Amino acid sequence: MTKTLRSFRFNLVQFVFIALILFISTSCKHKSEPKPNVSNIEENEIRVTIGADRLFSEFSHLIDNKNIALVSNHSGRLSNGTHLADTLANYPNSELLVLFGMNYNIRSNDYSIPKDKEEDVDVQTGLPKYSLYGRNHKPTQQMLKDVDVIIFDIQEVGARFYEHINILGFVMEAAAENDIEVIVLDRPNPITGTKADGFLTDNEFLYGFGAFGKVPVIHGMTIGEIAALYNGEQMLRGKNKAKLHVVQMIGWKRSMWYDETGLEWVKPSPNLPTLEALIAYTGTCLFEGLNVSAGRGTDKPFQYIGAPWIDNTKVVSLLNEMKLKGVQFDTITFVPKKMPFHSRDPYLTGETCKGIFVKITDRDVFEPYKTGVAMTWSVHEVHPDKVEWNKNVMNRLVSSRQLENMIYGGAHPAEIFKSWEQELMEFRQISQNYLLY
Image 1 (tube, rainbow, N blue to C red):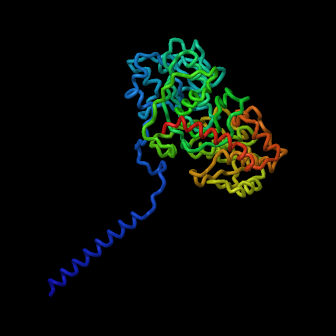
Image 2: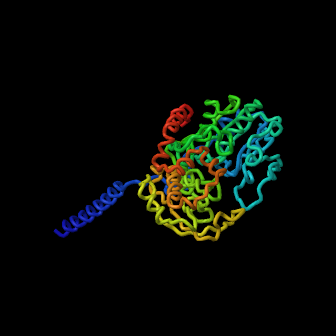
Image 3: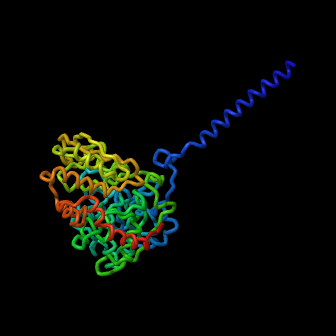
């Protein structure tokens, strides 16, 4: 009897223990999975292979026995961290002749260091280096002397007014005129390849620094797809076509945000420290053209927008009444200050700004350019006598006169959004022909 009782007790303990384990396991399985973001992707897990990482293997035939020019900036690195300029300089089967960079050193975007000269020498390789950000956006025939192939490798941001897709157009145009091949090493659109929004470029602003071709403000394409669009739609002047090769990515999907790729975040600018700041920037960059701080010199650039004279309570109320998708607006007070990476004081440095905080609540439905336009309208609506419009800057950011004309003409944001719908729909239809993923 005692032995039977002991056996019963032992089996009961086993039963309770197994039941408890099964309960815990079942409970865990039924918890909802969080959306992927930078914190739940395993460290060093690369989901996407960029074009640059395929150049020296499957696509080495494009550069073997060729004289090469490289257009790049600080983002032009392979996944092992090596800058493409150094890899090409040491590659035995071709010769790197010349480098083309942006506003700052081809290897850095620290604004506190001296800018490169328009014509300079790259210390690491000893090669001539030219800026395409200043006097020349388009390489000259002399700069391209003896070049067989131009390689373009820059991580762009998904917005037309950020200079890279426009410089790509000038580079392709120079290549077509000089019978030089172009290799574009594709990289992700960091804000996904599903979003397109905003005005297309007006004809009068074509081939300017902020808009090379007929492209909307947010284009929804990769740099390689933009290159194919320029060629296919004959956007290069003279109706020329470049001899174009796009080295595609592996593993990238149009729905991916940059922090879902497994690739290291490389700040496009020191003022864009996070992906969230970049997402906001593609709309709130409009405030760079007004007498309002865009949050440079704060912890949340392009999410803090303000000025000492703004009645931010009224502006925030107007904005929240619009019920824009994926965003909430709050009042904030901030004081811009010069950061270590700044070459000069940000706008309104040291002044207490009454601000609007752009709190992105759902990035998948958030429409940054519509938000930027709505915010511009709201500040003007509350302070029509205080807003100052810098036409040169706004023409680069908008590349259309419609926004200024409609805001000053009393149009509501809903009317402004509707004004670009037809041309945006036409662009989306055309762009489908050039999508690679």
